[in-house]
Image (cartoon, rainbow, N blue to C red; front, side, top):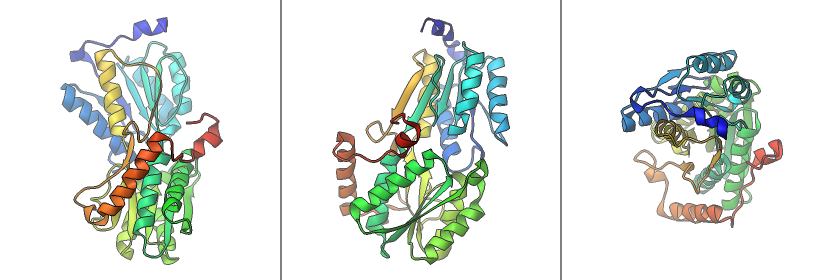
Length: 323
């Protein structure tokens, strides 16, 4: 850790962190926008400023990391699992640079990795879907077919079956490349197919592609479940809830820690216990989440936190990390 002595923060007035988004842009109303809100939260709470960058393709990930490192950014926050390899490469080249990566694990003395227990939050929204469905059939649409998204799918299915063991569930993935995150037309097509086959609630974990699922829900008079950010407001009356992934808190906390000198490398895992994931209730969906549903959800939350309910982590099997 002696090498980290050179990673002291700049004077607060001069401190300017950087956030680099995943594909889809910072106003994707989902994952990236949560990171943007975190940077804005940092700026509001500290009076500081930050820089950001929206890559248009994956080739720009490593280029952007290297460019900001050469400019001696105070902290570089990269958002998304696809930054794992670029971050590993660039962190080795710039050992005195502080990096934070969201959704990936990079083992390096100058990298802070922040990941989430998406399966725990997905379990709760699976319960909500099972308690709300009238047809007894629900659906899941994932973006890119990767272990991280299968974690959402497995948690959602386990939550639904916890409520209704005989529930019927459809699952589709949009694709196997990065373009799967930005294809709302394909998302709507898959959703329409699931609705036509009897689903009346669909959870999408697909970034901006999920906006197509929400639109399909409105067109069909059915329900969708949003993801990452609170998407309840997008089509009021047709978003049953949203599975919140508090990327905003992760980004804001990392920036503030780097600013005040308490930033540390290593792995941070945020689940229900740490308020890193949750389900959203607000004026747009409060009528759909009854007191009886809430009581059952909060009972399950407590059991997950205590370990009485263990939600399967699909990534543990895929990576062997036990994340």
